[in-house]
Length: 500
Ligand SMILES: Cc1cc2nc3c(=O)[nH]c(=O)nc-3n(C[C@H](O)[C@H](O)[C@H](O)COP(=O)(O)OP(=O)(O)OC[C@H]3O[C@@H](n4cnc5c(N)ncnc54)[C@H](O)[C@@H]3O)c2cc1C
Image 1 (cartoon, rainbow, N blue to C red):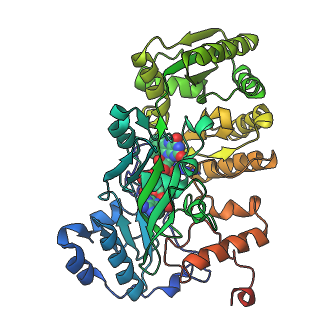
Image 2 (image 1 turned 135 degrees about the horizontal axis):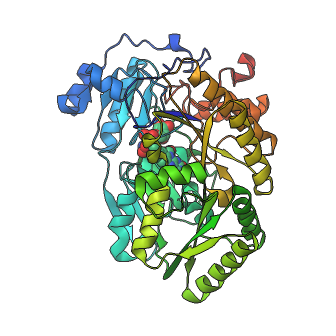
Image 3 (image 1 turned 60 degrees about the horizontal axis):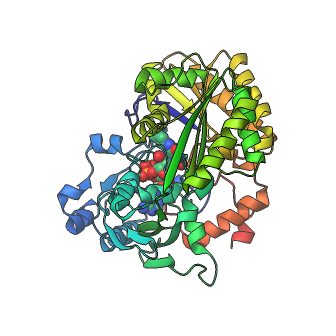
């Protein structure tokens, strides 16, 4: 879940300050000797211009795009893997926690630093190297901005498939950290499906490579563990990405409905045919109005819901698939079905969709966003429950979501300056998560667990499951110095004896 000021990273206004839970192995705030100041050593290593301790810098890097704030001691901006490793060794000697950070667009508090941490900002490791056009792979720095990668490859007819709505600013390292999704992950899979290997700095400051170019690396799939580990198992310094050939044809359609049930039923019916469109995104009426007022994307503001459906491939296939989607839409009483006439119209539709969260700024000072997944067969039921929760509490709800894969993003707009309002919104959002989980869904489809869902992990994992996950973490980071307090709730380890 995400409580946000509409302006991302808008400082500490309305923020909750993050305190570490009392747990062992790096989750105990008393464990760190944060009185040891590593600043001199860090300046010797990186120079004063890449080491920041000014209070303003510490406020800026205290948050990601949620409002939960931490309290870093030092922010460093290394240029190379060797510098990252040296920073980790300095932190390790001083017993100081470390937080990897990309662009800070995360919505789960994953990059919120534990008190006294060193924040390692990876944005300067932004080289795109070793592009293999035939093998369709490239080694890239974690600081490469997602959209910059696809833009840089456009001349070669290739792109990086995961396209989070934040792709103009979020980094490949952050996408790896959160296993980011995006509208076009419906057919292509989330980030995990596009990462072949990573170079990373371990908690000891060693540099290792996991995964590689072979289609099935022997041994345990450590690459799979690193993707989505939110900086708790290692600091990624280079990424071997899989590249996808740009399709010869793209058809983008806007389906307009009187109500959200018709749109939801259309999604279920499309999926039931076995057709997997490249993207299948939905917005309800309040979201359509917010987007249209902000982006002027040509959306009908009197519609109950719209679907953006996209099919890609050979023209002979896209014609058939688009016709099938149109037929299903008509069967569910779509009042209008429009096909983007050219690249400009297609780009405008996607610009509207991908700026949905940003458009909230015009209608409310704050929003709270949940990221849950529900089975597609329960889509309509859960949607009804979510609207009922908002109505029960008199809250303004908007919905924009990756409908094709059941990834909900109910978003409540509010004014955090109203007394008691933040608590009311958070409670309602928790009820929405409970509704999704009760329907067989899960806690997060793409934003990760971070701080914000950490204490809800027990809804989907048994104590034994959590203990097993804690042991994996301990195997990589026995001292718990990498991004402590994230993902695992306090008390995740079952017994001290079993940990010994
Ligand atoms: C407007 C908006 C739209 C969004 N839309 C989407 C969407 O469609 N899909 C989606 O999945 N998310 C979306 N997000 C959330 C966010 O953009 C993603 O989670 C993104 O992957 C975060 O990237 P970042 O570079 O900002 O990472 P950060 O926020 O800086 O970090 C995210 C996590 O990754 C870890 N991390 C960062 N770099 C590294 C590294 N080099 N090594 C190890 N760990 C690292 C951090 O410690 C943290 O736990 C959206 C956010 C916004 C503000």
